[in-house]
Image (cartoon, rainbow, N blue to C red):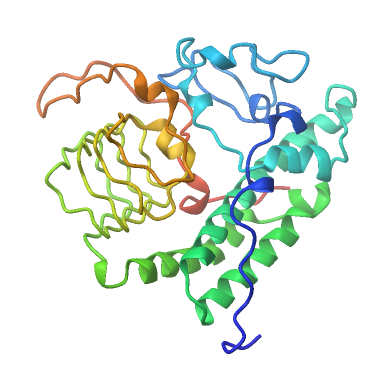
Length: 312
């Protein structure tokens, strides 16, 4: 393929990259482990069904997850990996009806989820990138990743998903840098900004890839062209913030944060219903902490910034 003939863009990030719980077997409620914390009310080891999972594979407290102490569940996004594993990889076999498939299915889900997350990021990157060599590389990486998701259980479990992610991440970083262009701002990549007051910081075009912004005060900030790939926004105060043109922002990041009617979001993202609830004031610098937020699973977008391990 030559630069003179730019590749056709892939379908918009949606469809198979959106979770369809009706076609899954509650895999996100069984496969991962989580620890009792501010995100989860109970301990649950990997491979054991959550006590709230019903016989129909539906959550018995779905409408009250936050009130019941499970906010971590509300911000988890499998990017469609659940239905891919359930309906394609395992051909619609139910792990309860076919117990021998349970272990391999749960392990396959742990591989498929980061692959689908990469598909989402690559689709976003292609939409941001004009025709040229980088766009062709992104399209090729998207095709390679899709081929990997089509593997059988044995192929998935033998996949070094971390190595594949490490090959894709530089392309995504380059796409973000190109999109920011001359508007590139402060470099906070991987920075620990927990609880930091950033209301006066210029974050337009900032590199926030992998930044930990847990509980950060981002009220009224302009995040235009800021790259937020993998940024941990749990509890971040986004009241009045402008995220309409933030790069690589997805729904689970927004759901994990706090905002209000003034928070400007991209048209593709829905305003979280819990944003209508009262917002706890941000802790002032030097004030005593109100609780320990440590522990539990982290519902951040780790797939595009973190490290994986070889699964066999």
